[in-house]
Amino acid sequence: MTQKLALVTGGVGGIGSAICEELAKTGHKVVAGYHPAEEETAQSRLKVWEQEGIAIDIAPGDVSSFASCAEMAESVRAKHGPVDVLVNCAGITRDKTLKKMTEDEWHAVLNVDLNSLFNVTKQFIDDMTERGYGRVVNISSVNGKKGQFGQTNYSAAKAGVHGFTMALAQEVARKGVTVNTISPGYTATAMTKAMPEDIIKQIVTEIPMQRMAEPDEIAYMVGCLCDPRAAYVTGTNISVNGGMFISF
Image 1 (cartoon, rainbow, N blue to C red):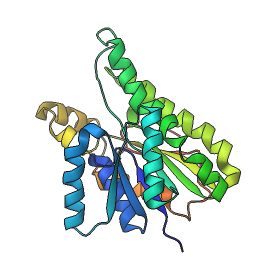
Image 2 (cartoon, one colour):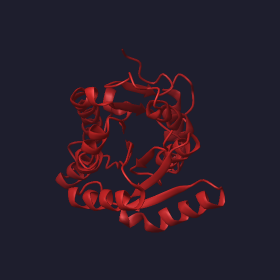
Image 3 (tube, helix red, strand yellow):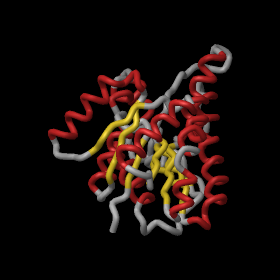
Image 4 (cartoon, one colour):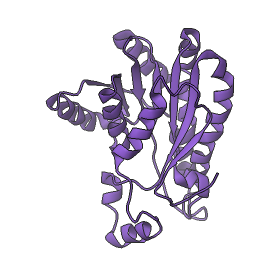
């Protein structure tokens, strides 16, 4: 079987890097996308992967810019060939109540967390449909399903992620391409671990499992959806939140 090429945006972050490692371990050739401003972080992550014997390449690109995504896509194709698996994982937060939120803070989150799906996926979806194979996994959030105080921008963007998933899944279903969403709950990354201890405790008390997710637990579910055997799963939203929000 020909090795599949996977691109993971936000691929040097806590969850993104775990997804890259999971896909590499399951036989994919992997490229981790990162914002150009994260060059130092990306190079450090690349060195760690090289030391651990994990073959993952890196590629810069600003997911909030269509032109930058086009450049990134061309660079990845030229170096590695066509992308078979796309994981849209890049995301940011700018938390404030709507009363205090600025226009820039609203648009920054919508551009990175939602508009990026168009900017990135548009570069690869035609190739996938023409070849008759593709896996697209979009990373949303539990707060896109339940909403969260102080996150009107983030909750709106993450809810929109699954709307994008459901529509695109219908458009490409006959072409061998699946499109799905993963909605993680609070996950133990460097960002969440840096939060005040009292806030962490408050969050954990609201989770039935009484702990945050580990990044590799999110990555495992992404890997399942990217497997060739997951060919009949499309348009779905899988929650990985420890029971924090349960629905059907």
